[in-house]
Structure formats: structure tokens, C-alpha cells
Amino acid sequence: MPLDASIEPLTIIDALKRSPARIASKYFYDNHGSELFELITRLPEYYPTRTELEILNQFGEDIALAIGQGLTLIELGAGNCEKSQTLCRLIQPSHFVAIDVAEEFVREGANRLRSAFPGLITHTVAADLAVPITLPTGVPYSKRVVFYPGSSIGNFDPADSLALLERSHALAGKDGALLIGVDLVKDPAILEAAYNDADGVTARFNQNILRHANCLIGSDFKPKHWRHVAFFNNSLSRIEMHLEAKTTTVVHWPGGERHFASGERIHTENSYKYTPKILEDRLRQAGFGQIDVWMDARRWFAIVLARTC
Ligand code: AVJ
Image (cartoon, rainbow, N blue to C red; front, side, top):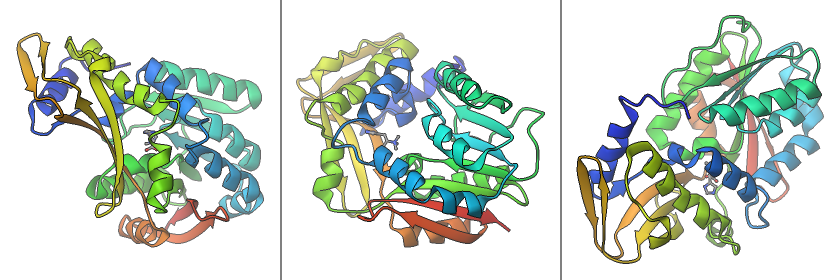
């Protein structure tokens, strides 16, 4: 994890001292967390990943036709680049740029992609999507398609998601587009099951953020002492994940500590669920023009192509 040691630990500690305490969800993704997330994507309860792939496969030709050819594919939060594999087969880009916070992980993904598509020029960028992204020199300016799959936009609250869409618009450039996957509002029981899987993988993923925090700030969290809590917040249209102290506990780090009462929570994630209408409105607000939407038959997930004007 490429972290700026002079800034990041302070941010984590500040958020931990607040009431309620928070740990930003980007800290899920150390290497172990990225592996756990990969396991999540294969859980029977976790429908988003497979539904998105289903849409890509079912409507691949339409999507490819709408996007066009000879372009530069820029994937945000690329992870293992598995989805780009499918997309690259469909649209045959000339360049591929993978951007992710987990540097090692994304390098491996890009390497796999390069061997699957000889001749494809690939770049990797280690970056946090919460700040403006600078691309390496050599990335063409024209015909850029920013790919943001997996409903990763769900982690951003409405104001931040708008900012992210605006940055994507800028990144895509003049004759570019954004291809984005979003999880849709549905029966809360289905949503909640996806974040409370029977095998407890999501619980381990949630608890792992504490181990990662221990590495980053030298704290002494004991992950097993924290219960995984996930529920749908209907009024804010989001899944919330928290870690709840099983007993009264004090967490220490060099230069500080925080007392937690039994039952007190640390908020670790929001995962916003969209309606197609809300997403389209936000895309227009961010400056996008023509919009195409593809959905699975159950309307659980949407892939949206938004063109820059
Ligand atoms: C990667 C943010 C899309 O919100 O569904 C999965 C992360 N958290 N299970 C999501 C996640 C718990 C995931 N995103």
C-alpha cells in the first residue's frame, strides 16, 4: 500500500476520535482485504458482481457498438482487472490504464491482461479516487472511456459521488465516455443478505479493516472483539456497515487512545443503492450528455454509458 505516512495515519486517528468513530472504507483494501473482497464477489448472496458480468455478456455487442473502437480504456478501482478482461474482449482497446489504491494487486491484474491481449499497451496508477487523478504521459487524449464497474461509486455520499463523476468527465475528455456499473434499489432483504453472508466472509472483510488500521497507525485493535453489523438504511438509500464493540474496550496507539463502550460502533462503510433516474440526474449534473442504460431482467443492477458532450 503506497501511503503517505505523513498524512494518512493522522486522518485515520482523527476519524477514530470522532463520535461516532469512523474508518474510511478505502482501508478495507490491503492485500488481505482485496483477497477477501474477491471471495465476497463469489458468494451466493453477493449478486452485484455476477449480475454486472451477466449484463456485460448479454448486452456486450450493444455496449461495444455504442462505445466504438480504437480507444483508451481507463478503469477506476481496477482491482484484479477481471471485468476489464471481459470488456477488452468486447471493445478491443489500444490502451488500458488501471487505477487502484492497492498497487500490487492492480499490477498483477494488468500483467494478466497484457498476456491475454498481446499488443495492448497498459499502464497502472496507484491512486485514491477521492482526489484528482493525473495520468502518466503516453496515455492518448482522445477516445477515452472511463470504466467504473462494480458499483464502487456506492461508497461515495451524494456530494462526493457528484465530484467523482465530474472528475471522470474531465478524465474522459472531449470525445469520451463513462461506462459505470451501479447497484440498484431493491427488496431490503436481498440487499441485507448480500452484506450478511452465511459464511461470514463479509464479517471477516469488515474486521480486517482493524488489522489494517493496526498496521497503519500502530493501534492494538483485536478484530475478534468487534461484531459485524450491516443493514439497509432506507431513508438514505444505503447499506451501512459497522463494527460493534462486544465489550467495553480501550484501543491504544502511539500518542493516544479511544474508549469504546460495549455496543458502541465504528462506521466502516456506506454502499449507496441507486435508481436509474437518480443516477441519470447526477450524470447530467456532472456534465454528461447522451445516456444509455442496460439492466438485467430482475433490474438489480445497471450498466450505464454516459457520453461527454
Ligand atoms: C466494492 C463498494 C461495491 O459496496 O458492495 C462488499 C464493497 N462491502 N461487501 C459494495 C463491499 C461489503 C462493495 N463495493
